[in-house]
Length: 161
Length: 319
Image (cartoon, rainbow over all chains, first blue to last red; front, side):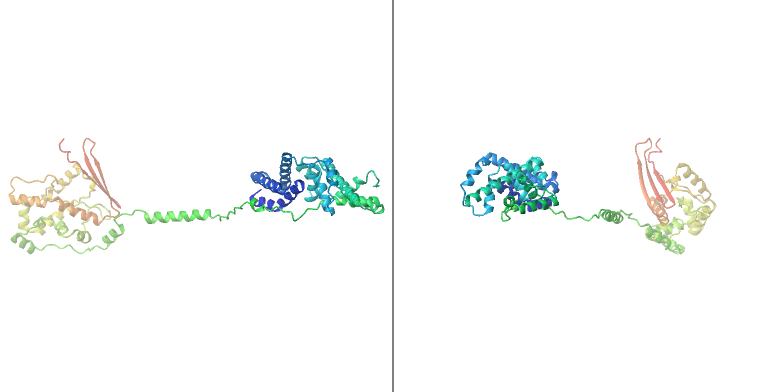
């Protein structure tokens, strides 16, 4: 990869990485730092990365960086606490906000797999390379994430009726 | 694929993910539309698809972008540059090459355009007048007419106007050696009695009978002795340049005349003029040899078709 291709990666993938991190961490400041670090690492290894694998490479670096930050800040949530949070937030007045709230309550692997799948259109194989999971694990995590969101939305609809 | 309470979530998930074939999709969609529960569940499943917020963008792209170094393509003119450099070097070598200070062309043209008119001979009246009036340069009167005319003219005129006598075989480009003689008092008296022309005739007769055809480099002791022997019929005495012969019976005036006649500078000048008149592409070399048992100074002169070597050995007679 040369400088021109690197700049093309910045223009093409920085927004997606930023949205992926923001969706998972809900912290734009941390997301910016992670994006910066991600592309700095790419620049250091620019001669070792090919353009066709640059997208997966960037998301993998961003994902690992995000996991490190989350573990450091202990901000990750688990599925068990999701019910309490959902039941306490009735102010969401549209479906998108419900879904976003549900996504925030997903485990990191489910959240990451789901966001990579829906936001960037990665296939199971690519998601597995980024997150370090197998394709079947990716599929299971995405399934569990959708099921949880569906149940989350269903609970809110029942409560608001 | 039949939907039921146990498998509808997995089937709907595959339908949402696009993992079903086209026929299965149509078949599943038909079942979903026909069942209200499944339809509601499908509606919730579709809600789980996350939609990216396009308004969320990364604003720090400018800090990540790197300056692209554009390398201007340099035309490959290597071969033509090498050719141009070679031409420049060749031209510089031709222009700056050191040239000989003597232009051979000038010498050739001078020789070709020299005046071949007869040599002016000093009339007898003038000689007599000079003798009576005590002429300063009396040497000319006692020289052969050939040498007299050479010595009496400036060097430039000598080169252009003097035609040396042909000595040696006809058609052979031999080097000319002019034999000079010192006159004895008897000879001078003979000249005064019979005139200069008669004396010159005798000299010319002696040369025509036995021409001297020598190269300068042959001037060793044996050759010199041979020349002296050959000149005896005209009663001429070959005198060594370094040791002029002065008989005991000579008066003071005769000694002076003999000495003046034997002036080496004039002879050298005249001889050199003759040589220069025929020289082309002259080269002059001086080779001193002071380390050998007999120190010498060899002077080599080369031109087109000619070569002369003069060896000076000042101490050769001591041993």
